[in-house]
Image (cartoon, rainbow, N blue to C red; front, side, top):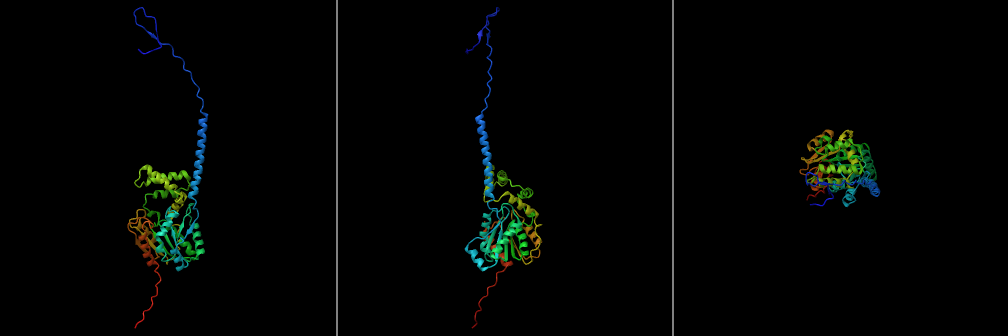
Length: 355
C-alpha cells in the first residue's frame, strides 16, 4: 500500500470499516514575480541596435545602388574604336540600353556589336541614371559628348526600350544641327501594347507608383520577382535569387524602373515627329520574340515614321534583345542593315591599262 499522510479515525459502532481522514492542505504561498529588468534592458538595447543596423544597411544599399547616378557617355578605349574615330571623323554610335539594363550589361551589348558599328563610326554607350530616366539629361549628356568630340553625325542603336528613347533624342539632336544617319531598333516595342511579357502588369504598376522604397522595398521586390520567375528553382531558392538580384549593386534602382515604365506607357506622346525622312530605320527582331510582338512592333514603327527608308531583318531563335548572347547573328544583321541604309563609299579601283 502506498505511503500516505492520512490517519485512521475511530471505528463506527456498526462495523469494523476504517475511514481515513486526510489533513487539510497547507495554503500555497503566492510568490510575487520579480521583473527581469536586466533581460528587458538587454532586449531593448539589442532592438535599438538592430534598428540602427538596418537603417545603416539601408543607407549603404542606397549608396551602392545610386553610386552610378550620373548620365554619362562611355566610349571604350580600344584600338578598334581609335581606328574608326580616325577613319570616320565627326561620327559616332550611341547605344541606349533596355528596360532596367545596367551599365555593365550595356557595355556587354556594345562589345558584341562594336565590330559591325566600327564599319561606320566609333561606338559608345549611354548609361541611365539610377535617379530615373530623364530625356533632357540624356540629351545634355550627348550634347556635351558631341561638342567635346566634334560630332556632327550620329548613329543610334536602341536595345529594346532604348529604341524609344533613341527616337526622341534623335529628334532633339536634329533640331540642334546634328545629323542622325540611322536608328536601329533591336527588339524595340513601338508602344506598350506590343509587349507580351507576363511582367507587363509590373510595368503598369511601376508607372503609377513613385517610391524610392529603400532596403525593405528592394527585399519585397526581390522576393516578388524571384517567385514570379522561379526558372525551375524551389520557392525558397527562387526568393533568395530574387533578393540577391534586387540587392546587386550592378542592377538599377526601383526609381529608374518607375520612370522608365512611365516613359514606356506614354510613348509615343514624347515624339514630336521631327526626324527627317533621310534618317534610315533598321528593324531587327526575332519573329518569335517572347517579350515583344515583333510583327506588331514593326508595323507600329513604320506607321510612326512612314517616310523614312526602312529595312527589316529577322534574328530567328535569338529571343529578345540579346546581342551579347548571339553576337555573330546580331553583327551579321547589323552589317546587312547598314549596307542597305548607309552604303559604304565606293573605293575607286585603278584603271587597268589596255595593251
